[in-house]
Image (tube, rainbow, N blue to C red; front, top):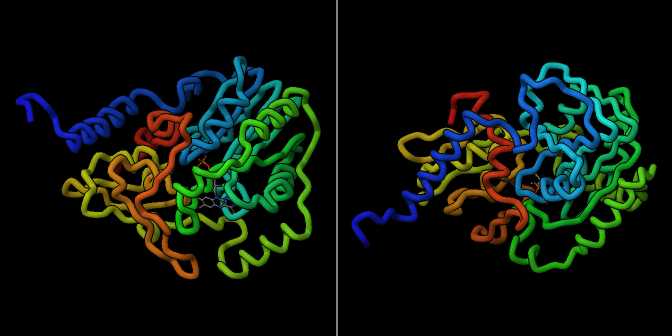
Length: 315
Ligand SMILES: Cc1cc2nc3c(=O)[nH]c(=O)nc-3n(C[C@H](O)[C@H](O)[C@H](O)COP(=O)(O)O)c2cc1C
């Protein structure tokens, strides 16, 4: 090796440190409003949560030239926010057929004022009750959704899916996205209907898994993920975590804290050093060498959106 060359291991560590230091100065995505700015009236305001980029990609596509993106893991820190825009959208992954806990919490504690409110859930295999559940969630919190739809993408739930197999499937994303875009741009009123078969599938899953019906994936990171011997302590796992639930001890990442089960840490680890703790009745992950991030989204965008470095000192 040349005298001044740095190893891949050190380069990755430096990247982790760089991400952490730049994040101390900037919060949220590049178009996100900072805490001190007033919440003026926007044209199209889109709130998103994304662990592996699918929902961020859809949010970016739907935001268009006039849209503004805001990250839910950043906005969740505002006290009783009131958001006003001509159109407001929420884009998020679907976890156990419903919105992730952090998204539900954000909806509960926010006030939305808009002429048109839409929601798009990204999912991998079955979205089942998501439209019905989300519509009711909005009603319970005093507003109506005008449009709720779902779009099928790579399924990132590693206990059930091999990312290599998922990536190879054609899920007709461009066509489906174009249809959703057209509907939203023409302010169509539509909540995707949920049929009896989908309801039965959902019921069966909840009975089999014994998961909570409202917060099915909220857990503790130390219960579901761990770093392996190849961990270099770069800290990217903590930077992409919407709860900042990793800490570095003796140069290694240790999982500890609240967890959405989003698997951002596992998928975005540059050395593939994070694995899932098998939790029966769920199977062991079929391919622990296969990880995923949406090809249109950079790891830096996930970090900007999810990092909690400004809110806790664990990193
Ligand atoms: C904890 C967890 C639960 C999931 N549950 C479902 C589900 O119920 N149905 C489904 O089709 N996909 C499910 N998925 C797949 C994701 O919804 C899907 O891959 C999504 O596009 C990921 O979005 P992101 O890249 O923005 O994080 C789940 C993924 C995770 C991590």
